[in-house]
Amino acid sequence: MNTQPSFASSAAATTARPGRNVVVVGTQWGDEGKGKLVDWLTESAQGVVRFHGGHNAGHTLVVNGVKTALHLVPSGILRPGVICYIGNGVVVSVAKLMEEVAGLEAAGVPVRERLRVSEACPLILPQHAYLDIVREHHRERGGSEKIGTTGRGIGPAYEDKVARRALRVQDLRHPERLAAKLKEQLELYNHVLVQYLRSPEVQTPEALQPFVKDGRLLLEPILQEALRQAQWLTPMMADVSAELNAAHQRGDNLLFEGAQGTLLDIDHGTYPFVTSSNCVAGNAAAGAGVGPSLLHYVLGITKAYCTRVGSGPFPTELDWQTPGTPGYHMSTVGAEKGVTTGRARRCGWFDAALLKRSAQVNGLSGLCITKLDVLDGLQTLQICVGYELEDGRRIDLLPLGADEIAACRPIYESLPGWSESTVGVTDYDKLPENARRYLERIEALCGVPIAVISTSPDRDHTILRHRPFEHRG
Image 1 (tube, rainbow, N blue to C red):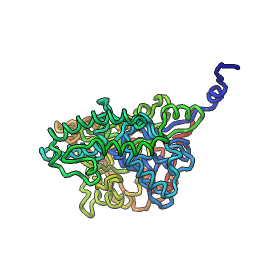
Image 2 (tube, one colour; image 1 turned 90 degrees about the vertical axis):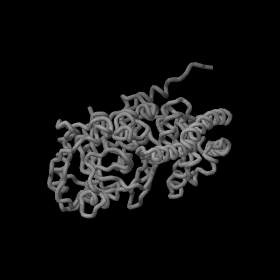
Image 3 (cartoon, rainbow, N blue to C red; image 1 turned 30 degrees about the vertical axis):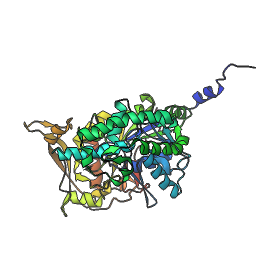
Image 4 (cartoon, one colour; image 1 turned 30 degrees about the horizontal axis):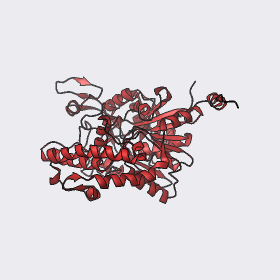
């Protein structure tokens, strides 16, 4: 018998033209409309990958007038036949993933046969959400400003990852190992909760009450819930890195879906008012297990104005609560409420200096401008082109750090608005002249070409100027 390995299949695979891969990132503080664009771009992809964040993200898709909100499942799931991957950079609440999948399947979307979850993903368990909530209460009680977390355990789960004590998806395959690691972790958590954060004084949310007693986390209920979740998740566990590299070699196009936005990045955002992961394009490689050379095009998603949820500096913020003001117009016409929490989004003028920072740290290949239609009817528009500092100096690039940003006074350039409707326009030349001037000014200020323009939440209301998946050269 011939025992030599056969290389015929791998040789054939290497003769295929490798796929082209696109990374989609938010360039502001999140909520830029990434979900719609990922769904729309998936028409040209065979796989969609989430590479960071957790169920603190919220992506809304509107297809044929039907709205779907996603938090963990990649936004390509509504496209038949597309494989969806959750990469190792994502922190996974299996409980929330189960809820989300159940809702999609009830709507007729087959999910489990097309969803692959990296065995290296850190798990979010009840202790993470509880610590998150208690810490925010502790900050408020001590007179400090809240970070503005979603209270879903994202930060504590990433802390465990960095401290090398995380429970990972692969641990669910090994009940004894899981129990031992969980016991050790809860001993630490309970010491911090009771001795430092005074958790018995904090009211426990109803959803966490089965896992908490007198401010202390209970080992057995948390363990049993994790073991129940393991049975459900096991068929979807995968070596996502290996599968993505194989898919690329056989010619699949892959779309890497970012969550949150660049200014919430743990390194490059308005620290400390940031999320707990890297939101920039470069993290698509580390968070999914592919080499940087496989990231061929970076599409930055940005609203035609700015919004921000939660605390932190926001140089171009307007009065968005008073009727008749431009900020109120953005808030109401744009329906600016967070998908995940329902919190109102603060609204303000477009900030080109901020976008220049995002273009720099992401290496943007092109821009997608969303919610252009929200600006319909505003007589005059402002674009922030830079900032004046307290010492009188002027800069045209967003500084690093919350204190420095809070001290910036925006310098505005005025442009005429338009009264015509842009809702549903799919041809660039049919946009109002002043809308085109506005977009072209953004392009010039930021130095990045506009590839795509969204003119409503609906999938089909999109203007395509350049094709991100098109092979070049």
